[in-house]
Image 1 (cartoon, rainbow, N blue to C red):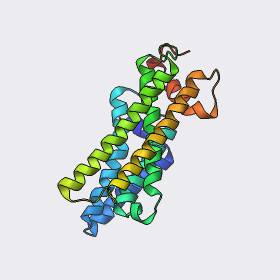
Image 2 (cartoon, rainbow, N blue to C red):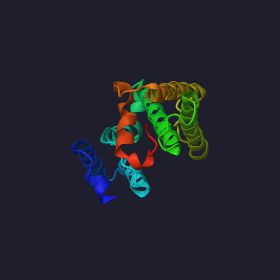
Image 3 (cartoon, rainbow, N blue to C red):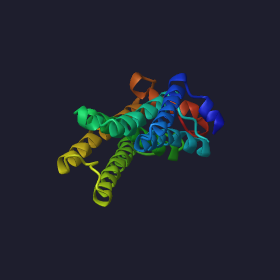
Image 4 (tube, one colour):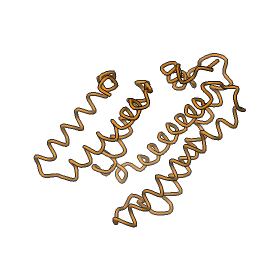
Length: 213
């Protein structure tokens, strides 16, 4: 785990440090809710690295950067500083980017099950599985928001049905885009701008893709 943390770039280390310092400053000022949010954001940002270390998987640096920025934008800025209300497109952008991210992760996971053999199943079938995973994650998050609002009196759904349906529509669009990237990867003979996230992950974890061609 320590080696995984050290391998991250200056930007990621800087964001972690700012979150930790924000938690300390908020604690000194008695702003316990902000302290909790800052520490929770830091924990969520570190969680994928911990999981990757346990599974012996190497995460590409751009993914770690994107994931860290997403956690800060979603939990820290979105909840603590109310960006969801202040910026009308904040929630849309986060849901869209998360759907693309989970779609790509879903595709890589499916490809990993076939040990990198892009001909083990029809391209459309592999992409449908990735699409289903991304939409499922988005749906589970909406159920979580509903449960938090009902059980603890929060306002995570904002405008209720319209917010939920809007988020699900954005999730579907983002998942479809990620699935399309997976399809391009399966059909492409050479690396391209569109497939570099998948290419990079496969290159860093060759042992998991022994049948890659």
